[in-house]
Length: 241
Image (cartoon, rainbow, N blue to C red; front, side, top):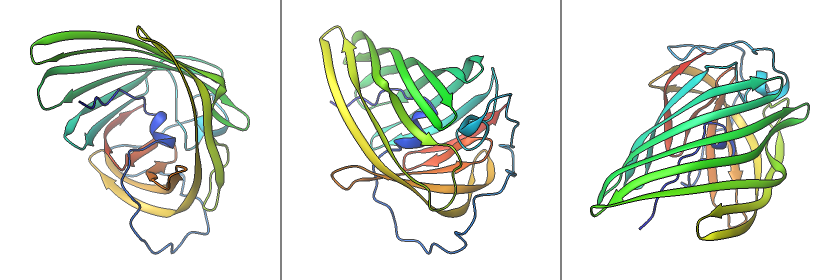
């Protein structure tokens, strides 16, 4: 059985899901997406932050909230992410994922992700999570944590069409089954400007494509002052700042 673990909104900036990129005409790709976000999603100020935290990474301050509809293969549900703490460039985001999964009576995952917005980009340091589910009448609770060595570099400052970087991280995942080391990297690029319409509204975005070593492409659309508004497997339903 495959379980989709809850992720926070910023994780979506670099890891989106898993469908292959469809061919598109990279017209009008000479400039970054505009400052304004139309529709119900709205834009948002920098909240006293700098770098990508006041740009495409996030908009914000304490209380900023994103709600996504998520559809991963046979698993559907909602992901709600909220900034619960902010101090300078340090951010803590609480995410609650509730999914409908075949043969599961219920499935809920609550996580806290600890980020650092540095002058050169956005980093993820630690994730802790509690997952509660019932499968065929058997209730389970799983506690886990992810600790990155030297932090996971998600996205650089100054995004524009043509920006390239490597989103990479090494570290350890800890559960009651023990520790597991990991090492991954994705080659990422901002391909083009693109207007997208999601339930939260209409946005001018930058299309980000990250490619894994095996060639799988992960795609997300980033709106200035909001962050990720759409990925391969998710769509922004509401945004409040």
